[in-house]
Image (cartoon, rainbow, N blue to C red; front, side):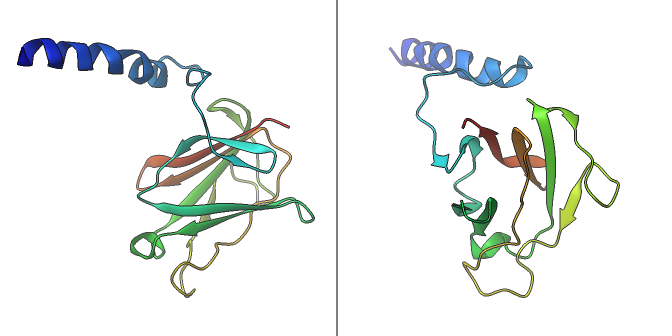
Amino acid sequence: MKRLFVSILLLALAGPVASLFAGGEPEQGAVRKQFGPFEALTFNASILRDVKYVPEENNVYLQLFPDHKEKELTVKLSNDYFASYREWHHGGYELVSPANQGKTPYGWTDHVNTSANYIEYWMDGEVFLHLKRVK
C-alpha cells in the first residue's frame, strides 16, 4: 500500500516538475498571485512576505522576511521566458542590489520600474520571484 501511495505521489508531481525543466513556461491553469499587471510564475513564500505594485509610479516593490533582508538580490529583465536579458542603464544584464540593507524589518526594497514582460528576482543562485506581465 505504501509503494502505491509513493508511486501515485511521484506521478502527480512529475508533470509540474518536468515543466520547470522543459524550457517553457509552467503549466497554465494554476492559480497565481497577481500584482498589478504582473502574475507570479514563482513566489517563494519562505523569502517573500509580499509584493506591491504602485500603478501611479509603475513600480514593483518587495517585502522580504527579516532573515533575508541583508542578502544580495539580483534582478534580470527579459521579454521572453528566461531568455534574451535586457540591458540595464548601467550597461550590465543584471542589477545587483544589497536588498533591504539598513532598512527596518519588513520594510520595502528599492523599486523596479520596467516595461519588460518578465522580471526575475534571484537570491543565493535561485529564482525566488518570477513575474510575468499579463496586462
